[in-house]
Length: 276
Image (cartoon, rainbow, N blue to C red; front, side, top):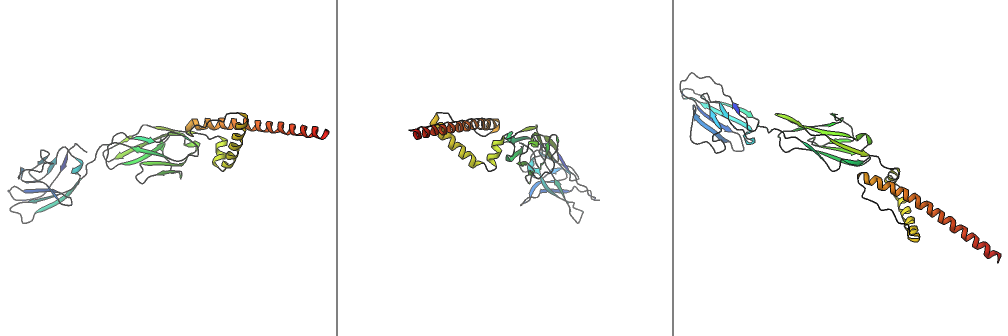
């Protein structure tokens, strides 16, 4: 863990009474020398990134203090003793992870209309390494439905097409080798679309254009104000559509009434003219 300690242990057998010559290296594109020592006596001055952070034991074991993410990697150790013919060598892998900060879920809007498409939840967090993600709906692990898509790293959850059954609370859990953390739940509120909206969204746009054209002509000739449409977003969209539906019905009735009156007048005029 970042800020912790790591003991890179060494064991070997030797009958010599001489002190071992020890060399530790960290594998990179070009290997980095961590420390060289004769027994516990360090040779030279360690690199700045290791200064005051390392301790070598007499048998070659290395203790690293105040771990950093940059300490992660494969360490090679070589130990040679004067009386021994062969140098002992070995490798050890050190994994350094950062604890996970509490994640949070970001979504563009937590209130949507049913049948909306591609609603994306983003499980975000500030800190944490080698993370994995799990999603929950209503406190239970998310089922593998075809409408729910996860990104390759499972950090993003996408609902392809929202249904009323998706109105629920959602949360995510982030895990790594040193711990886990769960987000606060976020509620997705799903509103049912009006019948008029569904008709329009499934091929009734021609009907809307016709109604608006007739209504505009009628309102211009009679002075009736057209309804104002608010932005289609959340509750306001549902309300504005309801108002539009009511006013369209009212204007349609008025148009029919006006047409009937006009037809009666025309008939009476024709009758009078015939009588003369």
